[in-house]
Amino acid sequence: MSHWREMSPRRILQSFALRCTPGRKSILQILLQSEQALTQDQIADRLARRRRPLNKVTIYRSLECFLRAGLVHQAYQQDRIWHYELAHRCGKTQCHPHFSCYECGRTFCLPEVSVPLATGLRAGFVLVRQKVRLEGLCPDCQQQPADVPAESPLS
Ligand SMILES: [Zn+2]
Ligand SMILES: [Zn+2]
Ligand SMILES: [Zn+2]
Image 1: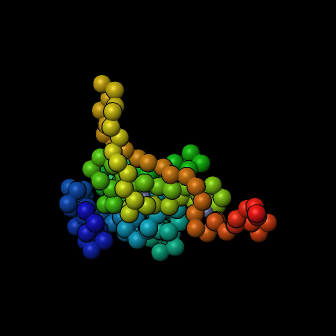
Image 2: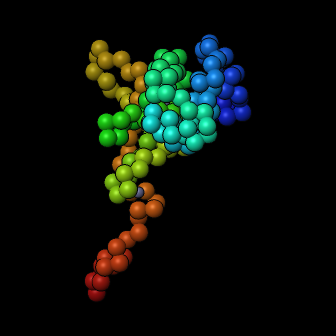
């Protein structure tokens, strides 16, 4: 489903059998143009900056509707706040992994990373969707401290 970026918001809404309103189109546009998952507040900020402000209730309701339709996923929670993203870079039973940096606290989408689907579930458990969260250091936070030698001076 990676062709979403070439589709108009109107056509995407149509293909999910969702009513096309100016507000929904604007929210979809923001999500289409973002490489990262966004919180409701971040969506509200970006809409305001583009002079298409929407109230929080409208944003909340639109996202709920997009979630139910499978157009949007709740990617991850950070500081107990959900981050939303379009589902087009996710598989049927698995979302792309996310990587959180210990140092700067940012979380990155890693659509190019593939993780095998969990196997060996006990009887009775039905897997619907796998979401993987990786943790570590991002490229920006990886400079080695100057007082740590790259190799131990043993000789
Ligand atoms: Zn997803
Ligand atoms: Zn970082
Ligand atoms: Zn993501």
